[in-house]
Image (cartoon, rainbow, N blue to C red; front, side, top):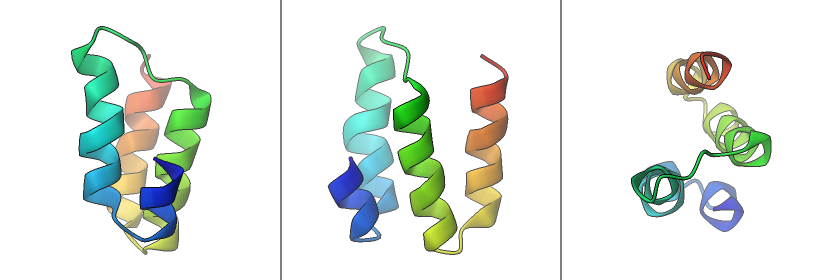
Length: 59
């Protein structure tokens, strides 16, 4: 997932890794959320980063 984030491929990062965790019944950890938040912020997608932050804090 970090590789996708470093290349700015946030949709692939979320779809291929993050969403696959939840589909398997696993709960993403702080590292997974942090990687996505960092990637969204570096790609200037602050709205999506805030959405992910609120999702993370609701857990």
